[in-house]
Every structure is written in C-alpha cells, then in structure tokens.
Length: 219
Image (cartoon, rainbow, N blue to C red):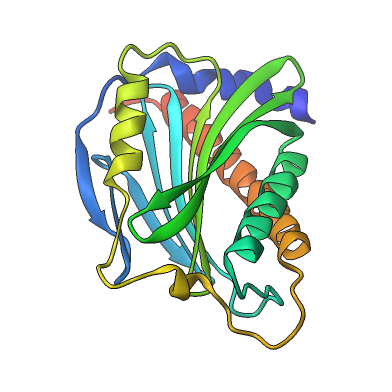
C-alpha cells in the first residue's frame, strides 16, 4: 500500500518556489506566519493550516487534549510529555527521532525535534515543534521528501521565529493542575502517535488532490 503512494509523493517537489509569508491569527493565544494562500480548516476540535514552501509541505495543527487523561503539574512532567509525544509520533510515521531539544518560546517551554521517516524507498525528513498550552497541543511540521530549495532553511527559521503567543501566558498555563498521579510520558506517547497518523493521512490527501488537479483538463 505504501509503495502505491510513492509516485504521488514525488509529485510534491516538482513545483512552487519561495513564497511570501503572511500572518495568521490562529486563535486568541497564538499567531504564526505561513505561506500566502495556505488553507485553514477547523473540524471536530482540530484546527489546521496547510501550506507549502517549494516542495516542502507545512502543517500547523492544534489538537484538544481536554478529554484526555494527561496530567502535567511541573516542568519535569511537561518535558516527559514532550519525550513521550516524540516517541509516539516517530512510531506512527515509521521513523526515528534523530534530534530533539526543549526550547523557550516566550515564557513557555516547547520542544523542537527532527524525525527521519522511510516509506518504501522514499526518505522523509520531518522537522517539528510542539507546544502544550491550556490543554491544547500546538504542532508545526515541515515534511521534506527530498526537495532542494535554496532558501528553505531561511524560510523555515522565519516561520518558527514568527510563532507568537499572547502576552501574559507562562509555564503555569502549560500545567493541567489535575490531582491524579502523572502519566505525562505515556499520554504524550499516545497523543504523538495518533497525531502522526492523522497528519500522514492529511499529507497523503493533499498530495492526491494536487495530483488530481494536475490531471484535470483546463478550459
């Protein structure tokens, strides 16, 4: 089944070049700059912006964890959540985490990671950043399937740097304040796994749609 998608995946990096970045106010807490003409969807508690830099697909996603059993009461448990998230994410995309680090985004703690995935003979590099905030997981992911784009790294850094959070938010907003004992790592792993599966499905649908549009006769 995976091999059947390879021709479709290869279609991603044959068109598009550097694109203008514009500001998207994602919700009351978050804004980000993404390529112009990115597509916004908001269904079933998941809000997403899909864009493209040359042949690299960019997805910014917010998923609600309000109904999950995640418990984060301090900084170390937050870091455990991020570690579990990355493990689950890598498993879901048939990959492995090759680098990760906890960084500061304003007064919040975030986690940057890079995942190397392989589907059949196709190698995919996924650069990601995840922020847990107010019972939501915010993730931005860059899917590079071999595209050679002259200013990709510059644009990627610009997008990551443009991710802004509302003034007044702090690490306290990243705590769940639940009374149960912490299962941050395990819950993070489960959330990361299912998010990875969902994003792969979205990515495949995006590619299939592009391929279909390419085949349609023009008037």
